[in-house]
Length: 350
View 1 (tube, rainbow, N blue to C red):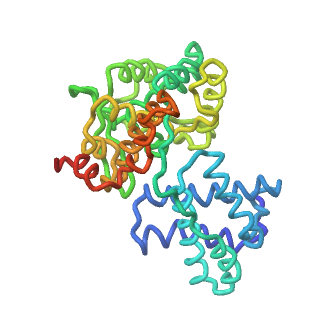
View 2 (cartoon, rainbow, N blue to C red):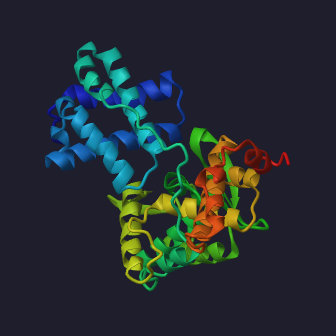
View 3 (cartoon, rainbow, N blue to C red):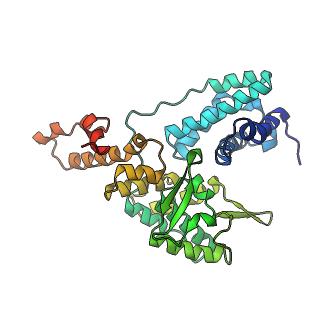
């Protein structure tokens, strides 16, 4: 094994994840894995940007400029929300705070990190989602005559059907899927080690049965094996998020050439937003939708109500002649979900 150029960086990373977070902070394995994913992505980004080996990455290379580029990449290339961008920055800041405690000389590198501010989210963000036609077109792209196509299609079906985050989907194990119930359900481990039970549609169960016959033949339904995996060094390992993002983006690009409703950048979280939006549009109560999604606060779920209202406003606006007296009633400010009366209705108070 090649020795790292900056041994203090990699030693601190090791101790942070193996000692500090699990033993001193008592973080759950799920939370630790999320933090690991952030630092791994940052190191990979630096490695690819500098075109060097991972072992050559140093503290000096991670300055405010490259960190900003990394966060921009998360937001614009991977299609993440501003809140996700800020969460990634907070995770990185947390590691540097620990590093300074252990090695005070690292403070000079922490100063570079602190130069990068948290991003400000728009006051009323319109959630990005796909139409049901776009989702259907994307799901039709994999060649299910191949094992890879079968796997890829089922993963996208699972993402959409459960509205789970990509990390949650890849954390699912065979034992988490319960077919003996009506309806069938899956247990999803969400943020903050909070588990939730999500029903599976009959169509999703059909996809699951076909997928299991090929990828988990003869395996017990109580197995702890990850539902989605890759084979490395002869053993099955949990699939990484970047692997899933790559093939989902490729199918999105292929679908775009067929259906104009498909967005330019298709990423896993779009399936969560799309399913949520479709459920809301088909009449699911916001409180139930919030529980389905595992939102800690109902306010988080309001983005779907606002997006749906804004979509209707734009449809009416486009169908209304500019000279019509109705035009004065199409002011977007009248549709903002922050309005007290709308909030009361959404919360079921009226």
